[in-house]
Image 1 (cartoon, one colour):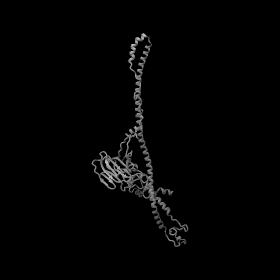
Image 2: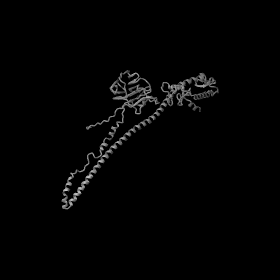
Image 3: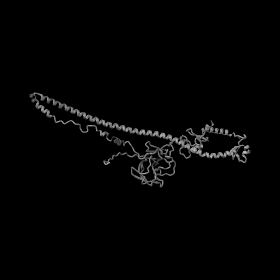
Length: 467
């Protein structure tokens, strides 16, 4: 029972019996010294176990736990305080044989088995050995602390993966819902046009058939009357001959009935290049962003838009400490880097008063500031400046407030240019021999968003009869 109780009274950080335990709002307790050591150097004070943010700099003492720990330690000391006896002489073991490396009593010291042996008080030897063992234990305790931190982060990462999958599924379904709606509306519109044409041409056929029927009825009457006259007697025939001939000759030469050109359904118009025509029309609802931001690289205080093209500063969130994520920098990178070719993208900075855009080497350290392999321009209270590792900060003269920034990278020529796209105003150009992959880079310390400007989607048709 005492063994299990001892485990329950161990600090999750140092794995030893609580010393001056403090209680957090999340109900987890830690040694005061362990907690302060954990928080040292961290901007946000979080529970080492569940990562709940703590609003207290000096959490209150867990008095009940402290009393329980002290009682447990006192009980353990009392149980270990009864000195062991020598198995040979039933005397207290007050000495330690340095030659045999074992406890001994005063009678053992004078026994033949310990002749010429050296002895020390058992308390002194025990204390020396405790100090040696304590030194050996410290690296293990530190390693256990690191393992505990990793375990907490792994658990947090597993929960974050689940949350990411659920959120991504919701976004996917929403996007496909919009596409399905577009296709359904397009289907209904095209069917409506088809049936409108069918009704119009069917009505035209009906009218032509009715007109033809009337002409056929009149013609049939004339034919029957003429045939009857031909069968009449000579006198009757001659009396009616003149009028009948005039009646027959009044009818013009009738053309053979034929279908007019375009009388049938224009099937080719409805089905020809159907998928292409739908795709071409779909460009009105489809946007393309030349840069997609990587949420796994975003600083915990940055919030990305659902389409991963915008970023703003917000309330710090509890996120896994994955290698890609920026901790020191208020930054986020593009999801794809470039190690060749020419690339260009526009960033809408709007009314943001503290921003930085450019490119950053993919291999840069993201957990702390150790110098930055970055080429960028920024805007803050100090105005517009350009930054590179070699030239540091260079003040820029910009005539008007910039609302958009175009970043143009020619990796092969080692040229990185910045300009204002609406006025085509050149802001700055870096010349450098690039040797590693560069990623689009956005940094902001303002709640106003920065946004990658989508480019217009164009559908073109190419053909070559020789191919």
